[in-house]
Image (cartoon, rainbow, N blue to C red; front, side, top):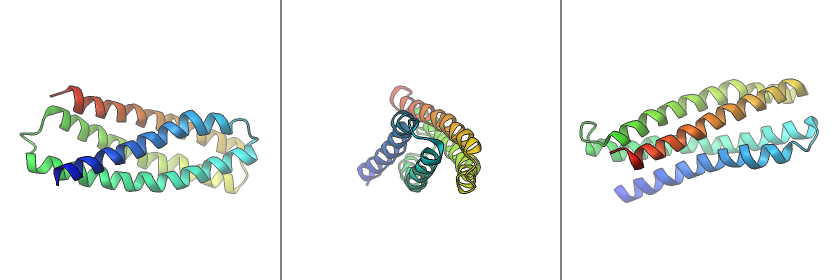
Length: 147
């Protein structure tokens, strides 16, 4: 059971962090060649689909992480596990802000064809996604390097 939880945990982290990397370093730069009326609806739709996966990964990360942490006991768990949990909770909160704030406003801007506002919101989403990518890397480093 522990191996299955570990697999699910790692697979969920790869999905979330890989998707964020794709958005930041592949989609956004390539879509920059399009005019705002084409670029912003494309980005909004890609993010809508990706964010469904992120919600699933949050659930999988929470459940699989707790399934591994609770049998070990909070007192007996390595420091790196505690750091990963704290960073993960921060990532979840940051994503919630991103989703219910800038992403919601991006969808509204696209619906209203308000391209300057949509561009501003995509910039905010990219900044928050980059912060979450850095936190994810720190969480992985914590569990690997901190005992």
